[in-house]
Length: 513
Image 1 (cartoon, rainbow, N blue to C red):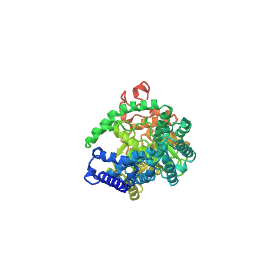
Image 2: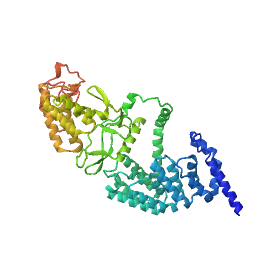
Image 3: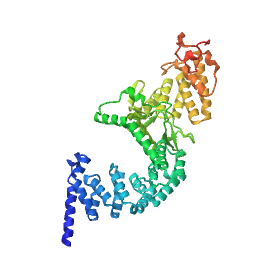
Image 4: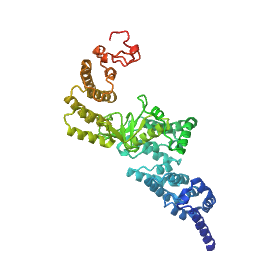
């Protein structure tokens, strides 16, 4: 009997040794499929050994992403032993901390395959991590893919708590990932709860998309699968393009083609932000998103970002907001979504190109050197807006007007800021300020007594005044008395000088303007 045991151990040691044969620099140059094929008989042999080889397999998964580790996870998945549960849990925690890639998914599948006996340890560990405000995707996925009443009740309990307590789950919990497998539980009584989540302000657009997917799978899995197949067919050309691009990485997207993919005002663009004052999460359209220098953690936005609840400008994108932007970035480059402009980290200030981050400090230093230069204050306002420092921008524009009341570009920028605040955040005081500066601007315009510093085309002022007066709900009769610039003849297809924003042929062509 002892001899037989020794022979079995020797066999296992031999198989384990063969499993490790490619754990070297030369072996790591090979692809997964190739190595898997060469070791298929070894893997099958260890699976047949069952519990007898568990100790050796558990040792292998202590070493991260070696070939032997990856295949050990596959073997453990097939053996389905309760003895492996805590080893697999520890492995998932290790790889998610280190961001090892898809090896965590293999461990997740192994735990799911073990089944009901893994439920108790998984719930205990997940609760422990939740108390630390840590969300491990593969750990949660291992649990939620197991169909069981205990799993369902745990998922329901956490989901209900998430709805009740925003602060508790702030910035670390991913509701879309947590509820993803509710359809596996096959209990439709959870549907009202999931639909409730979609209505929460703190849930981002992309989270809502995932939650709607879970709802659709629960309501009609057949219809969902059919729609998924149709979507896959639509995206096949995109996938083909991406694969071709991967083969030829030097090939760049045509500039005109990329511009087609950019944001337009009509696009429904939402990014999740969190106010640093009232601590509320909310979805905001940031306009054009600029990714600075290719760093996916540094962004700038076209629109002013204010809290919808307390109107504070101390608001930042949430962790989920970073994910939202990533989705937008991938979509823009792939060609199936608009919304992101990948920008250089350089910017022009005073006809000088400099790093974006240094531009604001530079212009502030120039203001110290020439504190009575209205033009510098105007430029400082423009740069401040680039950094979403709109309150500072307002001060700069106001100072430029104080120094030079004829600087019409400063009035124009102030009208734009306040009109945006009124239209997008419903701030009544902003409307009053916008109308005030619009009238000041109009007076300058009517007398033609203004400076056009930084204003490339003064003719656009007519259109601007017309559009903003309409947006603010004010009627300015004097607009029809505004003189046309330089005696220039108005073409039929030119913008009408009355400020309506319409073409001349469709507006005042038959009237005395």
